[in-house]
Image 1 (cartoon, rainbow, N blue to C red):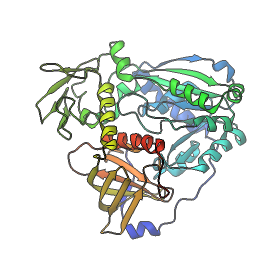
Image 2: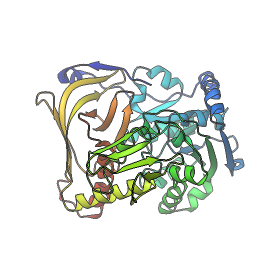
Image 3: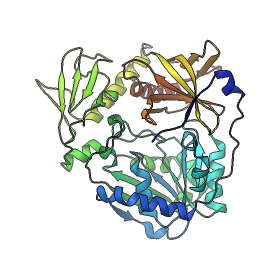
Length: 426
């Protein structure tokens, strides 16, 4: 899937009027039926099945649907499970670019990922209470990089209590393995399934504390797709299964070198020390020679997180990269405004560019996570920062894989800063 882009000067983009907030529409039953029909061949190809638990308590009332986010098939899965129930979908604002009318008739609610948005809550309440339709939300806000859950926002329980409707979770198995983000979204032959559960009734929401609700949500969103593949001996035989793996495993676990990893074909290679791993058909890394600290990809990824945190604590972490810059201020296009430079340190982000006209800073407590993606709308890997006025899509230049490390750094930096007293200007 592609997105409309348009080259424009920075001054011209600043002069544009931002998109006005519009109340979400009740989802079109006709469009929902079309999506349901389009989804059938894709779901049949994955032999999709699902199990349900406690759904008799939901019946025909509107509910909040919380689903893990693995690949493009997620929306098709939802259409299969909940048909003919109508539901709005919380989605990123760039999904509206060039097709705002279609997204609105689908009942979609635009929001900016990892940017505070009070209107989002009002829009969700409007659909649930005024229109009597459910709302589908991906609380992780981003695709999983390593097949495990990405951090959920804290105090989600506050939102659940305010909405006061049944909360249903949908956790998929196989969707990530079928089309992982690091592999340029290539489709592989993998069975896909899901478990649907009524996690909270309104009565339970009233009885439980916010902390208890958050704890149960964290437990529900605990999964490991690579372990699922290994334990069920799901064979992925495609000869390109390791291509792009260096996007998430960017640091050699043997010699510690960064920017020297390459995922190609079925192998992962460190060009600094020469170590080579084979990604076997069950999704585990097997060294060509000798031993390895990690066979399991999420374990390697977790080690990288610890290394990033240590660098932050020692004040040695730094991202410096030249970037191409796109801006989003309305739903007509992503405006490509030129080149610039992106820096990330313990003090947050600094983006400069457009011949010195663009100067944007974002502190470390701006958000708990980062909107980062691979092969974003078939353009390139991206790091997105910004606020309610504008989003800046930064496409790193060069060969180094910096997206995963930056996302880890944002998450760990937020935790560190939250635990420490901050200065008045932070």
